[in-house]
Image (cartoon, rainbow, N blue to C red):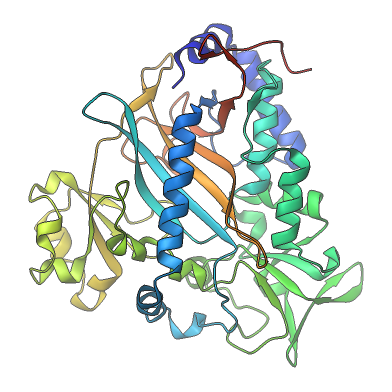
Length: 416
């Protein structure tokens, strides 16, 4: 998105450097990367980054501060996932934006969705360093939104480990060894000294939880939750403990926030970057129709509680909508759809970038943006599941130039 840096990168790109990038990512994360890695980073202007951060924080604070909204969202949580000890705010927030061209031609962010759930904090840290090193990019091109690597991991340690011994803190997932996010889990384990566990490996004794480590039974004092309800149900996972019990354990990312701030939030948001959205059951009863365009080509149907773009339908026709059972229509949204601008020039044509802002929010701290995650694509769906057969698309990083020369960002010397 910064012409000078884009042209310089494309001119100096080589397949050998890309292969080295993939090799280094595998080396640093302890195994294969099970999703497509894009050939290029994205160069983000500071002004655009500021817009993204401000919008994401404003929408998060709006939802967290709205007691009526939170109650409405809480009412949707299935009984099997109503877990004690939710807390006043989420520990993690991710906010996804696409980019459109305004009337003046300038890029403007538009919200895709937001989720109070952890993202790839570990992997993105590794990826930022790998792109800069393997493509000989300048050290002044920063990926982090905090001042240093040390500050980044200090914040993550504060929100994930808190004041506990690392061996009493576990990252919990459903079948973590089969998840595409496994490289991220491994980085968290390396940097924080925590164990990565399948939800079935955690055992309950009374109100306490334990796991086996080096032949010992280790008490669990805090859980970094990466297990989503959809996976628990879809894989028929049987947790080794009762989720709804009043357990003597803390949560880093309480599971109920996955429901409390999610696509369910979209109809409630009132912000310039948020596209109008309506619950399907209300729309089919003739309510709130004035909030959406009449042209179906400009609509997208989204299930509320799915991950990685599962179940999304563009331009849904009457047959598609009628096929959804009446009792389930409250679990779907219709949302206005905009064509996002293709802003990244590649050898295969202009490519769209979806930018995710990653926030952390410690229990005794403030909401802080710490990193970005970028997905590149040339189709309707931007997730890494939809880009495996293309080039110069997939998971990437955002690089923000800190050096300026005559009003334009530039590269100095390669990263040593």
